[in-house]
Amino acid sequence: MNSISWNVGHLAWQEQQYFVTWPSAKRPFPDIDREFVSDGPASTPPLQRVLDAWRAITAAADPWLDTLTSTIIDSGIPGQRSISIVAPASAASVIVAGGLAILAQLVTSRRRPY
Image (tube, rainbow, N blue to C red):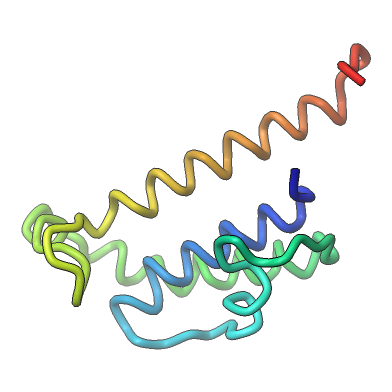
């Protein structure tokens, strides 16, 4: 199981890929791409570092996300026919967020299963 900070970095990678790079071709944090890509190497980066990157990436994504309409969402990912813009990011974010919730519960639980 990956560390909480790696999972936050992976979530930042997903949001940068889906909501910043695809619509704008910009990649504000290339190090996030190298370190937290799917199937990337496990690590335990400083949590504050990945939280700062995630916050900056979500702030960079917000202006584009605010412009989305049903027509844009239905048009698909640029270069990827018939794949909704939101579907891969939504599914991946739910999986990562769920994993983080489970990890947090395990860390704070008095009845640990190990």
